[in-house]
Image (cartoon, rainbow over all chains, first blue to last red; front, side, top):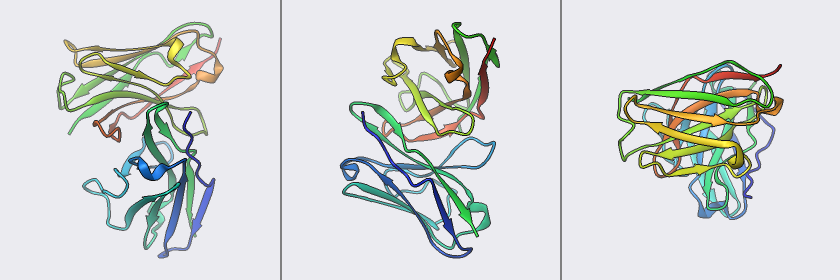
Length: 107
Length: 119
């Protein structure tokens, strides 16, 4: 089965840049999607197909994907960006797969 | 804008069947534009995809749940449903319904409903 690995936690200073990685075998050949989830709320899509933003998502959120690692970048981090973030791909053997999740703390 | 709402019992006994329904508004469940899925999240843990159904009735199931799982569509009620048999405490989770495109990103989510498996 296909697995996606994320760091358990990432800390970022207010106004600085946070990078959240998502590791998977040859993930660069797949479409990667990213979700933000705040406590007690349903997830929200923030990036789809590697680097596309849904309407209403700030330009501060961007994504890239190459080789064995996809990355979600949060520029000029704000207190409101504190949340759990999950990557997700579709794989031919496992169908839909979520990453292990990363807790982002803004200091 | 699609809206989704989960409904069903909040408490299920071990070995029994967990049944949930997702009611869709703002669009037709018969639309070829959407896939309809279920995702769950055990307390304090990450997201797990359960399965997806297309309006045609085609289903895609998480291999780890496939033997216990049935997802179906009721076009007359604009709803889709989840049945998970032989539940254990490990099935305790917040269950979300959602919709996604053919690219499999989930762009609309229900608010989620907590289902506890306990005697």
